[in-house]
Length: 266
Image 1: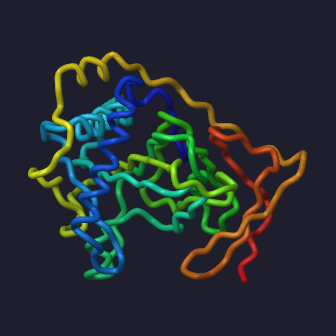
Image 2 (image 1 turned 30 degrees about the vertical axis):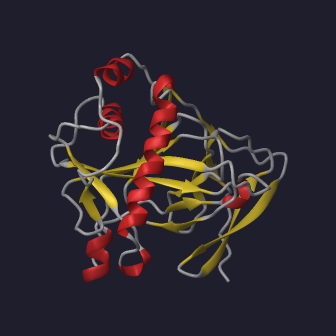
C-alpha cells in the first residue's frame, strides 16, 4: 500500500506541549542558519538511543507504531524535524533524501519510509505521487493528531491553494516529520539535537500518558470525480504540471486519486 494513515497518534494531554517543542526546534534551526543549497538542519535519533526530551520520546514512540511487527533488519534510526507554515503556503515538491550527500556529491539516497504527523488542522494537503507522470497518488489534508507513512522515494509536497483561502498570522500549519533510515544521513544537514537546549525534559508522566494512548485506523477514501473536478498546477524543477482533483474534497480526509489522463507539461 502506498500510504498508511492512523489517528490519535499522540496522547491529547501532550499535544500542546509537543507543538511548543516543535516551535523550539524551529528556533534551533534559525540559530544554525541556512546551509548549502538553501537547506535547513534536521535531527537524528539512533534506534538504540534513550530519549531525554519529550519530543524525542514522541518521535521514538511513533516509530514503534509505524513498525508494529518489528523494525526492518537494515534500520538504524530516524531523522526528525518540524515545520511551521502559513495557512495557504506551498511546500515545494521534492524527494526526501540525504541532503548533505546530495549537496556535496550529487548522490541521491532515500529513506526507507517518510512520515508526517499533523499537529494542527491548518494548511494545504500533503500530496504524494505514486507514478512518474503524476496521475496517481494520495492527498492528505491536515487533521490534528493524524499520521501518515509512505515510501521514502515518493515525490511529495504541499498544495497551499487547497488549504485555507485567507492567510493568517495567528494560525499555522504545524507538522512533525520523521524519516526512517538504514544509515545516518550526512552532517551538517542531519545532526544529533544539541544538548545545550531548552527542550522539555522527558518525565515519567509523559511516558505514562503516551504508553496508554492507542492509535486508531484512519480511512483512505478513493477520490470520486462524478460531481466534477478542478485542475491545479504544481511545479517540479521549475516545470509546471497540471493535476485534477474532485470538487468535493473535505478537510481532514485522506484520499487516493487516479484521474486517468496524462498530466499536461508546459
